[in-house]
Structures are given as C-alpha cells and as structure tokens.
Amino acid sequence: MQRGPSARAVCAVVAAALFWSSSYAVTKRVLEDVGPLSIGAIRFTLAALLLYVLVRTNRHHRPARPDARQRRQLYLSGFLGITVYFVLENVGVDLSTASDASLIVATYPLMTMLLELVVFRTRMPLPRVAGVLLATVGAFLVVRNGAQVGGGSRWLGDILLLLGGLAWAGYNVLGKRASTGQDAVGVTYYQTLTGAAGFLLASLLEAGDWRTPDATASSLLVYLAVACSVGGFLLYNYGLRRMASSVAVNILNLVPVFGVIGAVVINGESIRPTQAAGGAIIIVGVALGVIERGRGATAKPDADEAVSPVAA
Image 1 (cartoon, rainbow, N blue to C red):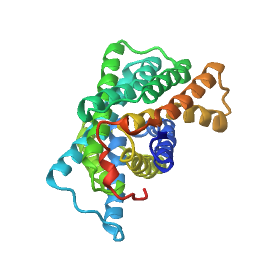
Image 2 (tube, rainbow, N blue to C red; image 1 turned 90 degrees about the vertical axis):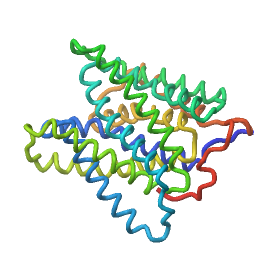
Image 3 (cartoon, helix red, strand yellow; image 1 turned 135 degrees about the horizontal axis):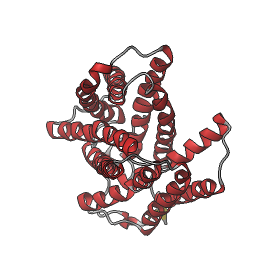
C-alpha cells in the first residue's frame, strides 16, 4: 500500500516553489536600485511586520506560545534559512558560474536527506532516494543551458553555495523539529523575525550606497515581502510539518521548471529539447519522492502527525 504526504501538503510546497521561482527575476530588477543585503533587510522586515499582525489577530486558532527551547530552535532555523542561506546564495551565484550554481543547488535535497538520516535516524524508502536523484539530474538539465563564465573566484563561489546548502538543510531539519504544536503562521513569524534582524545588521555594510528606490522597485520589494516571503514561507512551513524534510526540499526542484515556463509564457522565449526533457525528469523525480511504502517509511513518526492541521 502506498502512502505519503497529503495532497494538500504537497500542493502547499508546490505553490511555495511557484512563488519562489518568480523571486529571481524580481530581485534582479530591484538590484538596479537596492543592494542585495538591503533587499533582504527590507523584504524580511516587511514580512516580519505583516506576520506579527497575522499572529496578533489570529484569535480563532492561537497555539500555545513555544517554550524557550522551541523559540531558540525557531530563531536559529530562521537565521540559517533566511539570513545565512540568502547571503551565501546571492554572493555564491555572483562569484561562481550559472552551471556550477545550478548543479550545487540541485544537490540540496541530497544534503537534507543525509542530515535527516543523521538527526532523525530516518530510513529512506527507495522511491524517495530515486526521486531525489532523478530530480537532481533533471534540475541540472533544465538550467545548464544558461551557463555563464564566472569570475576569478569561481571556486570560492562554489564553496559558498555548498555552505548555503548546509544552511538550508539545517533550516529544514531544525525547523521541522521545533514546529511541534505550532501553526505555520507562528513558526514563520519567529523564523522571519530572526532572519530580518540578521539582514538588518548585514545591510549596514551597504549603508554608504543607500538611496530611495523608485516606484517600480518599491512595489517589487512589497511583492517580495508579501508573496515570496510571507506567502512562500507560510506555504512551505505548512507542507514541511507534514512530510519529511528531504521530500519538501526535493519538491523545490520544480523552481527551475516554473522559471522556464514563465520565461516561455511571459517573455516568449523558446525552450530547448534538453530543458523539456529535464523538466519531465524533475516531475517524475518529485512524484517518486513523495511516495512512501508501508509502515516502515521512517524509524519514528513525524513530529507534526500529532498537530492539528492549520490552513496556511
């Protein structure tokens, strides 16, 4: 008998991937007016303020306040998954090549799966392992055509991207463990609060270049905060609490697929046969990754199984 994450949880992570796939083009436009660290500071500060309002007005379902240990874990996961990850990714992509970045980022599900194995003693079903490997290959095929020549610090960029993968894996595993008894809004709020604080401190390095963004950049910053930060992380955390961390990260391999579809539909770009094949492989890999066989899919039940479902 096949069992795995609910369709609702899978759809939530897929929707998060759809939001995040748009963030690259939006951020590229905003970079014309605002530095990368300042973008993170503005984006996540706005997101934290909005989430605070949601937490305070969520009177119908207000979970118990997380204990001190949970708050420390949520703060740390937010710092790893927001501040550390986005800084390492942005700088790493800038120093490395697009092909290197695509291959390294596509290995993030593997990193998460290994960390999950160490922390949760999770036994990995064969379909999940096969799905992660297939999606990794497919993601590389989709984006390898956009390879560009990197700078002289390519090796440093590759190292930063690998460290970013470890930070993202830590965010997933630690965030899942700390979310027991909490809803997606509360978990995302605590994580975003720490991520915003880290970016605010980091943005001081760009203080000399600060200037008022134009109307277009300002509206796009609001989009990044509302859609990509609040919407994306709420949906992702909702799904993450209901599936294995490696499964959730594997679904994010759909991001380059959505990116290529957007380029074709919105910009009228053509799609190469290799990209089409890679997209098909990703979809098969993601489908395999969400399949769990029998009762022995994990050594112990997921922490979120005892939590009542909350709409993201």
